[in-house]
Amino acid sequence: MSTQEQVISIIAEQAMLDTSDVKPEDTLEHLGVDSLGLVEAIFAIEEAFDITVPFNANDPSETDFDISSVAAIVAAVEKLKAEQSK
Image (cartoon, rainbow, N blue to C red; front, side, top):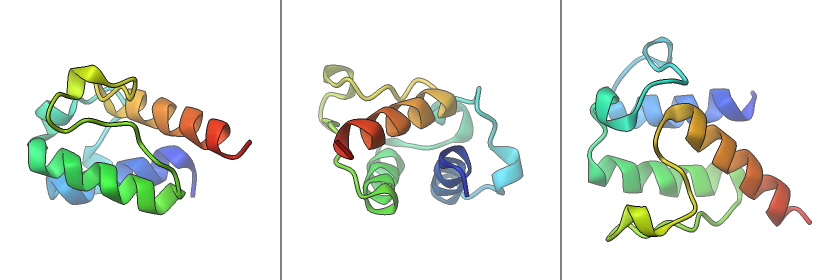
């Protein structure tokens, strides 16, 4: 399973949607993922990819982890995977 497929699966689970309903250009807000769902998705992403996501739930704008869209999250996860595997 690709990184994108795994991230979409995690986000779909949090949004209670089918994976086919989640597109890379979608925002979490558009998908109905609230702040609690976002935090749960971050934890699930950390567990699935064995990475540490630099995310501040109290102030999401204070992080380098881009959550502006599904595609941005996928790119951020791929970047973290590459950095943390060094």
